[in-house]
Structure formats: C-alpha cells, structure tokens
Image (cartoon, rainbow, N blue to C red; front, side):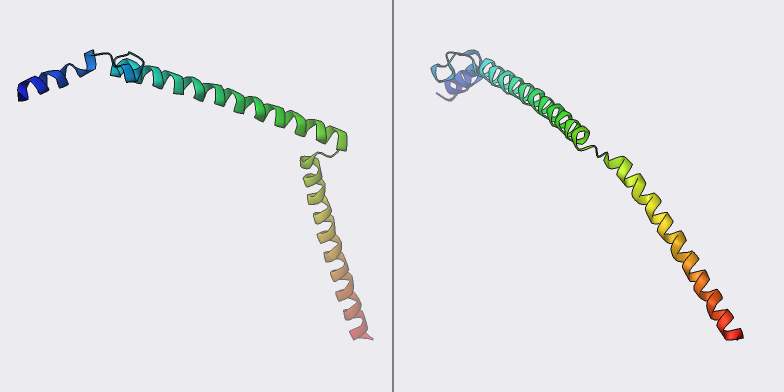
Length: 104
C-alpha cells in the first residue's frame, strides 16, 4: 500500500498531466519560466524605448524653448557672484562714508 504510493510519487515527474497541457511538471514549469523571461525582456525593451523617446522629446523641447538648464544654472552662479561682489562693494563704501562722517 504505502510503497505503491511512494513509487507513484517518485514517478510523478515522469508523467504527463492533462491539467498541465499534457506535459510533465518540469516541462510545464520550464515553459512558464521561459514565457515569463520573454515577457520581462519585452517589457524591459519597451521601457528602454520609452526612456529614449522621453529623452528625445525633452531635448526637442529644450531646443524649441532655447533654454539649456546647465547654461542657465551657470548663469545663475555668475549672477550670484556678481551680487555678492556688489554687496561687499556697497558695504565697504558705507563703512568708508561712516568713517568719513565720524571724522567730520
């Protein structure tokens, strides 16, 4: 009794099953795994294509608007440095005027 069940269980991987499209369990599993792998590859390929399209659209938008974010950031840094220089110049001028007024 028990040995027959154990023998059937041992041969389970050799038997085809109607619920598995008349395939052996491992063959069915391999088919599913291969299908999933193919779907992942297709989706990754689509994702890369969509990223490339998005980048191309972004580049076209930047060309049309004439705005390059890197150039604008560089200009902002220059303006900030100019502002700081002028602020220091005005501060020095103010201090010089204060000293002059104190002398008078």
